[in-house]
Image (cartoon, rainbow, N blue to C red; front, side):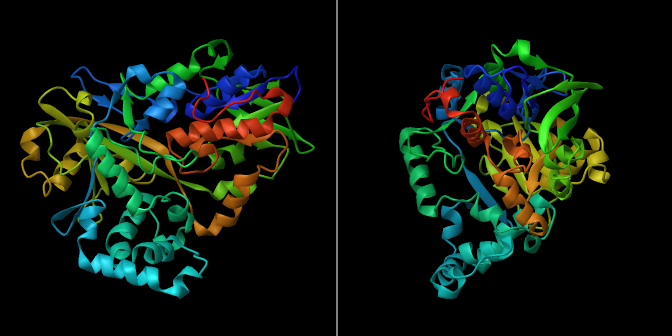
Length: 452
């Protein structure tokens, strides 16, 4: 990396800002280019005049990340968080309620005791979930939810969908839930893999929304951030990054750190075809329909999963059950997640029509929902979740190791094509950059206590 040419960071979301703060801390010149008019990306929070707060889905962060960013005092403790599965007209708490079904338990035990299963190399999510959870629970709950979330059959998805993301055991989940009940804090479970979870780590929510995190990271970086400045091309010569093109101007750089979705980054490359295979990578577009309603506690739990084919959505979330301050007193907010394809009939439907569709969909759960309804706000994310298709799993595994181009690095959920959640993105980005910089440029830092 040349000391006279800056590193270009593509994207001003949590990963891009974390990379920028890291480089500044280590006195490495950089410029961050953000295509939009402000930083934060999908970590943006929205507020309306009626006192409701919306996010792109239900964002949870933990006290460990808040402390590392220096915003712990500006966060509220989440005292309760629960999940349920609504199946065949009945609700089952997760995971204990499902474990009370003898059929699910016996099927799971049978799968676990089958020695042939554990010697197999699973080539699809379908076989991994059946082996891990048993055929009954997998076929009736896990796989229908997975297919609604991803938009493709589970047999076409990589086993990594389960093995890389669902690393906590049921025993650990139950342990943390019980500790949460005793302490009056929603102990975080399954949200962090970069640093081990423990009973002293619980969910919190920043005052004013999750956008506070990005604003905090961005403090002191303002002079190096270029808003409304999309990177149009990355120029490569002799397999080495040379420059970026921004608003039609070619700017020399010593390297590029990209948070752009992989298939978009592949189209930006000039002078190399090393990233051509990334054009096939798929991201699942999602719509988050935020229904404003009278009352509170209208759902069985904070999150209710809907594996049945009778529902358009696969997940509904009543955030005020866990975070009551996100809605005015006497009112609530229910977020309906709908997977779709950009430009299809659902994606193109106007907000009022989507709200009406959700009311009809949720009447089995909330019979008087129409009388409670006070309008909705729809948020659309064209690249909400990476889809791990088996057809490019080998390419994805290589992409995790290297971009194949000198001076080109990727961080973040979309850049790495990863299912990583917010805390993992923060620590992983710093770990990756420590490996990029020469050892004499990197200060000693301990994960869990790294300053912004």
